[in-house]
Amino acid sequence: MVLYLPVVLILAGLIFDFATPARFTAAPLFAAAPLVAAPFYPLLGTILVASVSLAAELGVEVYNNALGRAESLTELLTVVIVSVLAIFINGVVRRSGARLASARIIAETAQRAVLPRPAERIGGLRVAARYEAAQEGAFIGGDLFAVQDTPYGVRLVVGDVRGKGLEAVEAVAVLIGTFREAAEQESSLEGVAQRLERALTREGTRRDGLDAFEGFTTAVLAEIPYGEGVVRLVNRGHPEPLMMTGDGDVRMLAPTNAALPLGMSELGAWPDRAEQAEYPSGSTLLFYTDGLTEARNSQGVFYLPRERLTGQTFQGPDELLQELIDDVRLHTGGGNQDDMALLAVSRPDEGRRERPGMPTVAPAPATPIAPVIP
Image (cartoon, rainbow, N blue to C red; front, side):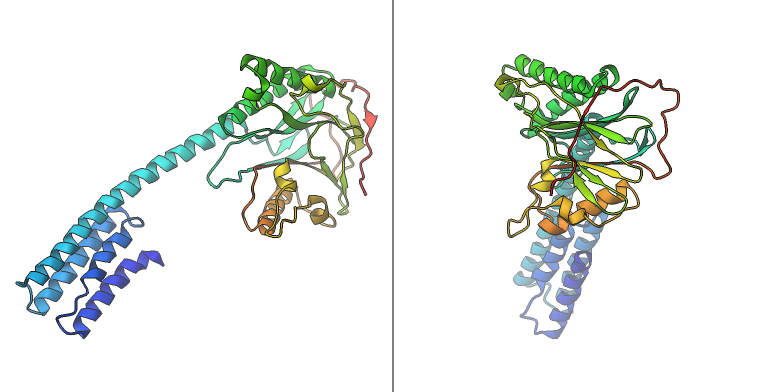
């Protein structure tokens, strides 16, 4: 609609001038047309609107036999000056738009380098991941996810670094790099968690204190062994994952004992202990950061993913995440206050498959997890 406004202004000016006595002028309408076009039209379009506006003003003055008057010359000069200003504004807007587009491309490239989206199929599982920034136009922040196909099964991590900005992004890069290496090398999920703990402690010391390196990170690590219908979890102070079965039932996989987030070993050290839950065919695991559970509507009511998802079924993990994101936007009115990372992993109905060419590794014993919270 805005694109037609310059034409409407010029036509309205012509009608006004022809329908009113000569002492009334439509010069403000002719002058406004190129100004309206400047931020929305390309350069040639703005020049064309300015030329038509100037021609319309000149034609009206000729029609009224007023070309030699001082008032007419002033009106013509006004349209000329405003037209030149509109062309200048158009150039500024185009240069700013080019810089903004370049910044967005750089930010998106950085996100893909630091936080690449996992493949749709990993180790026979269907995988989908989304990162939703709270700030429009932002691409990277402190939420993280990674999925790795390893000799021990499919391993993954979802976490949330305390804080914002470049320091949080640096912490994300360190954690994901450490996870990818540890997931291939460590025989137990507890060992992976300890590697992440040491990486944060090391970086905090190198940067003169943990507070300089964002302090701590909540995280949940998972291991899905090949050929077994189970999932093993180590939760370090992170929101509990959800297990969605094929019949619409949703269970929360809560740890038996609470644990401190990563990077808080100064406050105390407790041995990590993986806990195990059934993961039947046709089920989907949903991992998320607190941007999901802390999303509030205008009345301050928090979003409750378990209640919203209970009774629903989805064709795949990508459809689940899209529906979830749309539902959160509807709940909040599009005004989420925190970044949100989502990771969904589905076990297909057609049966579990071994990873081709990979040796079977005996898993470390795990404590059964109590999956349901009433």
